[in-house]
Structure formats: structure tokens, C-alpha cells
Length: 478
Image (cartoon, rainbow, N blue to C red; front, top):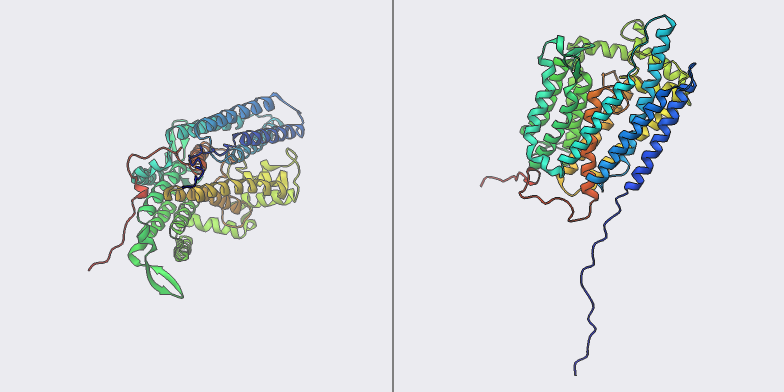
């Protein structure tokens, strides 16, 4: 007699898809729109003319642009991180508020002396934002799988180097602004190729480090308890160091040089998890900084203005001194939007926009802005930690760190923590090249976060093994 055993149904249940959280993104975008609109109203209420129609126009344009961006993300990357786009929208909106406030100050100054009222910068910034979001949507539509970028790693590297070096090789008449040769002037149109070069070079280094990972993890001699890499494996870091110095010499651009070397160094560290690379990189950095201070006059001027801006108050130190006065006037809670004098700081709408925020919103407001940047960096790093492929991990880490390092360089220069470099705050400052490049960067981060959060099996299948999965193996001779 055989006992009957009940048969259980072992059929696989359909997988439950994780929530896309696009509703949360929409709520956060609405919150950003409320904050930006309220800030615009406060700025105008603190001006003699009161509210104008520009508040309505600027607010409507802002709302329309980011509503379209939200729809694009909902359609093209439904599982993307829900906080990155709202944080970027808030930063972009606050930048519009500060630029509008400076436009009002310029108009009042012109009226007081009987001059023609200059055209404002806000319409241009809105136009650049629209174009940047157009690039943002185009990248999401064209790059359906971030791993495909690894196949074009060397092409991106070559294009990035060409874009980085081009302004330095061209005549100063079409490439130099304020002493730095980082621009290309084409008629009435100007562009900064270095902003796009950083993304192309990050793609190259992420692909390169994945394929050559074993070369960087092979230990050489042991010094002071730390395993140093072999001398011949230092070539990529030496190349990055040499290129950074080359940019500094040819283009007189301290900021891009520092940003480029920092990104390469962090990517190598993330790929190898070896502190030795950080130590060697910092030694190279200190050596390059020392040599640059000895040989290059423009570096010496920046360092002198950094150490004691009041020693040349009417010259090289004027901008830094005015920035410090503004931050001191703002104090903890600021003078209030529209109630300060940020227009007294030269280039307040570009290099020193964080000083304008610190004056009118105080330490609390500036800290809130920095915390918003920190959220973008952390969410980007989180996408890198959770994505399944190594190339995506490295690329997300590089993109996120690039934003964080650029903000540190900008705010550090404005607050006299480090010498001024000429970089601008991402999404906040006025300028087209920075907005276009950073929206491309955000689109790539959202694409990687979509791949990290999407349910298994929903990602595009690869017909062939890409470069990012082809590892270099170390072998010993018999």
C-alpha cells in the first residue's frame, strides 16, 4: 500500500515589479516649483517696482520644462532614481532666482545713472535650460543601455582629449576670456569644450580601468607597510598628471586641471580599492602644484589673492574681498532675497553665484544648497553600488564624484578655502556649456540608476560581450 502524498504546486509565480516611484518624483518636482516660485516673488517684493509679469513668465517656463523632463523619464527610464531630477530642478530654479535678482540690480543701477537698461540674463538661462533638457531627453532616448558606451571607450577618450586641448592650441582671439583659453567663439556663439570633455574622458577611463583592472591591482614593492604598484603600471596616472599640467600651461585653467586629475585618481581608487594609488596621486598633485607655483605667473597671482586678498584690494584681490564681505553681511540667516547687494561682487552670476546665495540666504541657505548637491552625489553613488556591471559602477562613481568635486572647488574658492579656479557651480551658475554638459551627465546617471532598479530580465540583452566585460588576465612566464 503506497501512501498518497499531496502534490504542491511549484509553478513559478509571476515576479512583482518594484514600484517606479515616478509619483514621488512628480511630488518632489512640484515642491521644487513651489520653492522657486516663492523665491521669485520674494525677490520682486523686496524691489521698489514690486511684482512684475516676469515672475509669471519665468515660473511658467520653469514648470513646463521640468514637466516635460518628468514625462520623458517616466517613458524612457521608469525605474530611474526619483530624487536626482527634483534636486537638479531645484538647483537650476534657485540659479534662475539669483540671476533674476542680479538682473534687477543691473537694471536699477543703469536707471540711476540714466543709462539704457541692459537685457537680462534670465531669458538666456531659460533657453540654455531648455536646450540642456533637450540633450537630457536625447541621451535617455539614444542610450537605452549604458553598457553600450563601453564599446566606444577609446573613441570617447580620443574625442575628449581633442576637446580638452583644442582651445589651448587655437589663437587667443577666438579662445581666451579673462585670461583663460578655454572657449571657442563661433560668431556670436561661445562654447566651452572642456565641459563635454570631462564626460567623454570618464567614459574612456571607466572602460579602460575595467579591462585593465589586474594591471592596477598587481602589487610591487612594500614600503612603510603599503603595497605600491609596479613602476610600469603607473603610466596611466602619469599620463593623466601630464595632461593636467598641459591644460594648466596651454589654457591657464587651474579648475579644469584639478577636476580632471581628481576624477582620474578617484576612478583608479574605486577600481582597485587600494589606498596606495591615492597616496601616489596626492604626491603627484603636490609636486605639480609646487612646480606650477614656481613657473607660472597666473598661478602665483591666484595664490597671492588667496592668501591675502586685501593686500591688493583694488586689483587681483577685489573679487575675493567683496565675496568675503558679502558672506559676512549675510551671516547665519542672510539679508533676505532681494535685500542684499550681491551685485557688488564681480561675476556674481557665474563664478561667485554661491557668494550671492550666502549673502541673501545666509549660512543656512547655502548649507541647504550644498545638502541638495550632496543628495545628488549620494543617489548617484547609490546607483553605482547597486548596478550589476562593473563599467556602470565605475561610470556612476565618476559622474557623481565629478559633481561633488566641482562643487567643492567652486565653494572652496568663494569661501577662501582654496585658490580661485574659475569653475562654476553646476546647474546654479549662468552659462550654456555647463548646463548642457551637466544635463547629459544627469541623463547618464538616471540611465544607470534605471538599470540598477529595474527588475531582472527587463534590461536590454547584449548580442555580444562588450569591452566592459573583457578583463585583462595576468600570466607568468614558465
